[in-house]
Figure (cartoon, rainbow, N blue to C red):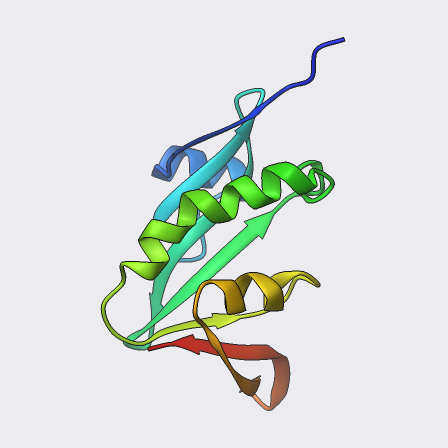
Length: 125
């Protein structure tokens, strides 16, 4: 039995639209994780109100593949650690805190947006 391998590529607008099922909610630079040619994960840096945010998003097909999730971090690491200036991230996945610590981020507390808690806010500076 052969198992499919996750491959990585620079994200394009077409791949982002296939991942989201329509236009991406923001423009960003980053990478896409492909499983059998289909996008199952995205990660990179986007800008909001003049601030840079690191992000990852994944579908269940990738979430269940622990080794491939680790590979995703290694693919994104040069982009994130090479960023000059303040870089924020919101830790929404259960394993996000460990990954963010490894990449040099510090826990800043809870991010509040429109009066509601979004999640733990981290920053790398």
